[in-house]
Image (cartoon, rainbow, N blue to C red; front, side, top):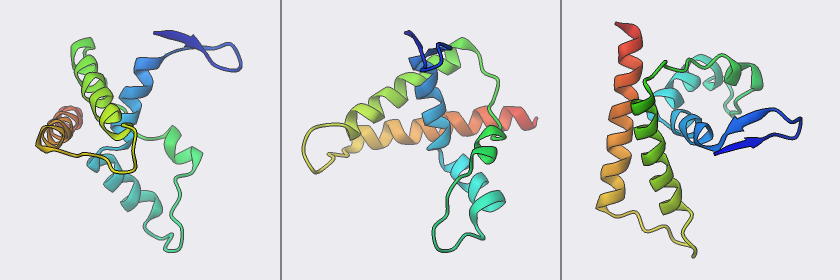
Length: 111
């Protein structure tokens, strides 16, 4: 779904789910930690210049849509009303599948 930001620039909502999945992946968390935040003991924060330089894999439309679909499911599971998130085996499987898929995308970059 296409929308415009505050400055009138177009973006697609689904793209945000793709980037959310990347940023929440174990692989990128470790990457950012090792290269940029490990020395910040008290309150590690990701700075904008770090975000601007995070490697983003070039993917096919199908690969991207699969990542987006899983990200939406995970967001929905974590956004359920109530104070406790019900993280069942199905959600854990989706999470692990997402992690494997993202790792494979980054591995393809290196080969």
